[in-house]
Length: 258
Ligand SMILES: Nc1ncnc2c1ncn2[C@@H]1O[C@H](COP(=O)(O)OP(=O)(O)O)[C@@H](O)[C@H]1O
Ligand SMILES: CC(=O)N[C@@H](CCC(=O)OP(=O)(O)O)C(=O)O
Image (cartoon, rainbow, N blue to C red; front, side):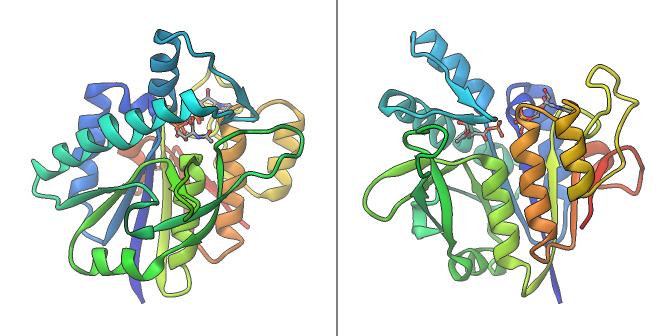
């Protein structure tokens, strides 16, 4: 079976020039077909605050009104996506930046109103496997931002961890897929202030316990829910940690297991 690596980077890496450059240097050297998914929530929040637009998050996801949708489109699909693509081009990695609307690669439905109305936030309905496979088969590296569309002309803000998981799951029947979440910490930590307290393995039962103990919170909630979803849908390997350890055989990161 062919191999594919789906790699997600979050806002804290993107916001730090040195971390981003170091990550991209590692990423570009990966020889397997690869797909990059980036967030940028931190930068969107800074931009919103600078424009006096309130930032509202609920259980790790952004409540997205019209003004916020404008900001995230400019920040995610514009500044961040194009900066990353240009940097990858400089290393001869033929990157192509995409939202889910481009090539109809990722369709979504507006998140249903349950506990809360998230506004213009999408839950992924369909990943267009064929078109993405055409890209990777032609040595083009897709770089996805955290935006999907509903095929009726509406862009939707979609958690970048979810996008990475959905892409990984769409390839899992025909590829050996490894899914990596790179962020600024060593992994999921037992004590958020202690980088040496990495939890090496998490399954769905320990996840529930860690949530009820308050050890897993905020942005880590959707991240681990997505990881559990991925391992339950045939994704071969799902890991969370720092890029300098994740792509080596070194220990010191978190693996999510069934
Ligand atoms: N147990 C934990 N271990 C590590 N990080 C945690 C934990 N619980 C909550 N977090 C928070 O989750 C954040 C990562 O999620 P998020 O902010 O969405 O990052 P990213 O943008 O990289 O996806 C960390 O920066 C940290 O503040
Ligand atoms: C709906 C929703 O929450 N979307 C996220 C998308 C960006 C993201 O996921 O960024 P990080 O990976 O850097 O956190 C947001 O706007 O914050």
